[in-house]
Image (cartoon, rainbow, N blue to C red; front, side):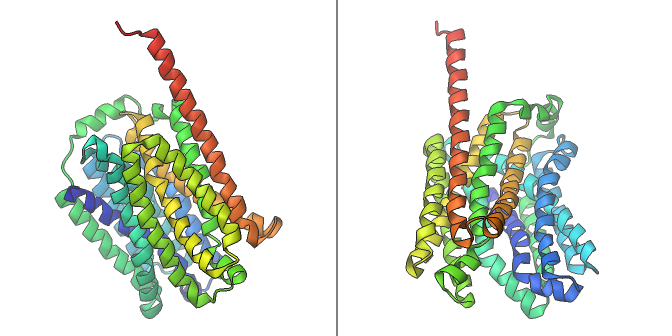
Length: 395
């Protein structure tokens, strides 16, 4: 794999840290800024909102830029946003800075996916996407725990200063290692109307598949800590080491999903959705026994991120050329929309449904809906291909 790909991984690492580290600093932020813990928790929702609305805004204003220029500009936005978080004098300034920082998220991963696939041979495209997303998984395993420790030891602002430095490093390595591309290609792409890509049924069904799959992931993941303490019976101190098992599963599943998708994309996508559903459903029983619960947590992480590269690669294929970068960015926004809906769904199950012990069961049903949408999309594609073959028979 080319070094330029690891420059994208560095950017993904920084974005992963800034997205998730706030979860470990909510008490510190709420105490320092004089707001409730629930209000501090809205900083997570604000970031997710920024991801969703940032994709169309940046897609609309950057269609004529070269991809390298856009990636570097996104790292500038990311760096300035984190610096603004570090020096924010009050809660609402911090919220605005979080939203600004999130603007870089969807476009970076979306355009980064397109650049990653252009750096490698056709039979390694999904693996290239997986390596870029490894930055996100490593951020969960190493970056977030370290950032949480740093913020608790030296103040939460120190964590955002540290992430600002990561942004500067990522900007530099992208500038040095990612090859230049011709902005004329992007102008031609823009002139053809990238928004037309959303008139393609296959792209929209791909985005819906992504949303539904990650509704299931976050309906379960959001409430992992209370499940482990209140149902399995672990102490609060044991949760962090168990989440490292989850993080290890993320890395393994991410790389395995990319490797398999390079060989057979559609079977990998279908298989990963089935695996995700099966693991979540099995967790409903496993969480009542400590050893089985830990094993299930690791498998959950692997199954969750095994879906990422296949889903991203599938949308890229359906977008085909014009609008590919924008469709890829919207698919990243679709992951985050799934995150937000999943967290709400899990909460609804706890507050109004069967309760905490049934969260993983309900979460496990949602990827089956994603699978149904994917199968419909595949059948539509096959019918279209058969119709085209009949209309243009071989000579």
